[in-house]
Amino acid sequence: MHERLSFHIKRESTLHNLNPLTKLTLVFSLLLTGFLSKWYWMPHLLTLLAILPLSFVGKVSREFFWTALRLILPAAGFLFIMQAFFQPVGDTIIFEFHFLNITQESLMFAFRNATRIIVMVSAFTLFLLTTHPSELMSDLSRRGLPGQFSYVIISTLQILPQIIAKAQTIIAAQRSRGLDTESSFLKRAGSVVPLVGPLVFGSLAEVEERAIAIEARGFTSKKEKTSLSEIPDEPFDKAARWVFITLAIISISFNFWLP
Amino acid sequence: MLEKIKNNFNTQAWVLIPIAVAINIAVGQIVLVLKLPVYLDSIGTVLVAVLCGPWAGALTGALSNIIWGIAIDPGAFPWWPVAAMIGYMAGRMAQWGFFKSWWKVVVTGFVVALTAAIVSTPIGVYLFGGITASGSSFITAYLLQTGTGVWEAVFSTNFLVEPVDKITTAMIAFAIVLGLPKRTIGGYPKPEQVEVEGGANKNQLYIAIGVVVLLVLFAAFMLQRILGG
Image (cartoon, rainbow over all chains, first blue to last red; front, side, top):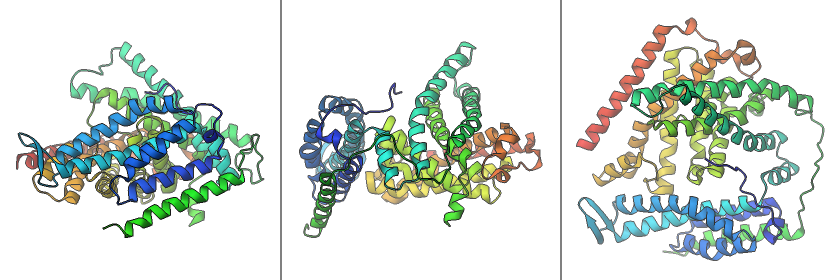
């Protein structure tokens, strides 16, 4: 479980200073290109030529590599192994072990899938490392996203660590009372109720109070709201967004020329 | 349409959604600790869906997966449409009156499971070529090895795995609703959807649990047949 929910690291860099929407556009263009390009090496090259250099531009390369090692590579690696062994495509067998066999085609297939996943996850990781969630939400609500959405996302990120801590307290407390969480299947199934019950009822009890509190602060007021912090949106950002979108469209339309 | 979506949300609903997302994730983690063959990570989604309506449920589901992806396991991210559909379908079933007694809740769970299986099949096939990094993929892998088509293999795996999980989820959510004070329920947009019929008596509960056990046995039987033949 995570001790810290926000990946964000406060630093001064070009990537940090970009408008959040620009970065989001960049992430989605990378994603679309990575997944929709028919060219086999595209996701691979995107990771090497776009995402890795960007992590240096954003001055978060150390944290990025750490996340990649701990989170992205294990997931992608497992997917790669599963796919390489079990995907029944192709007949050029490279490796055989009883009923398991790896063919050249399944290896290629697995590699492409794994690199696609790496592109997707690492692009998002980079985005989260350089953007604070509340920055993104206040920029989006300035552009017309209803304030309620930003409330939901920001407060989820705030509540989640509290509730996970509460869950761990409940597990520890019930164990100290002798609740069986380790032996037979039926006993473990039986301990769902004493663990989930207190957690859910305890958390739901807060709902009404919170609702009254935010209602009193004009949560549903129709008046236009002002923001304490202004998120910059330079002409450079607008230009960059168009460049990203155009590049994504170009790379996807190249598919028509590929056999 | 817009009005219908809007009436799913009042202030209390907006406050419930983040808590429900957190409940989804925390309960998912508890179940991981208990090493049970279910996920139960949509209890919060189902709760929001029945108390507030399908659109609120869909939003909760989608957000849960997005935030799960951000915070814990990036692999959860592409499945957000599945979670959204689970919330939407649970809300619709509640709207049609299928969240008022134990056996109806079992039906809701089953329908939700079927929806989840249908929605997750194309994602699994297009994004991962059928085999994902989850444990149930061993079944898919086996089916693929025996020459079953990729769509059928992925769908049968999902259909075997989902019902038990979603019926249990729906039943736990129902038990929670039964335990909530009437006054609290009244503050949500759709309190009439969970007015309990027939006092939710013990017999109904036993019948419902019996149905779940039968389903588990059926799934085990099917699994054996698939793996044996």
